[in-house]
Each structure stands twice: as C-alpha cells, then as structure tokens.
Image (cartoon, rainbow, N blue to C red):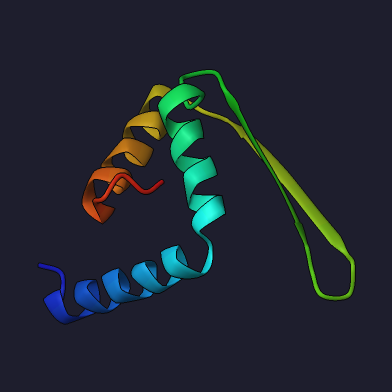
Length: 80
C-alpha cells in the first residue's frame, strides 16, 4: 500500500504546479480531450536555462492513453 502522506504531498505539489502554470494545464486538458488517442505522437522539446534543447517523442499505444486517463482521474479537477 502506498504511503497516504506521500500521496497528499504529491497532491499539494500538483496543486501548486497548477496554480503556477494554468495555461499549460488548460492546453494539456484540451489535448487530452481532443488529441490523445492511440497512434498519436506525443512530441516534447525542453529548452534548459542555457538554451540547450532536448527533444523526444513517442507514439501512443492504447495502454498509454488509458494510463494518461487514469492519471487525470486520480489528480481530479479535470487537469491533464
């Protein structure tokens, strides 16, 4: 069984992230409602503070889509 205190801490951290980045979460919610389906390609680029870009992508499987839906359900409030 997972430690409830750790889950509560994670929830508080998520709430803080949601407060700091509301536009990102609205974008992710839109994507999850409209674009996350089997075969979709999730493409991510992160640019660090020195300007170096890191890029990766993944083609989503049915299991990936289900996993992302479960995360959204656990976090609640429709985020992600």
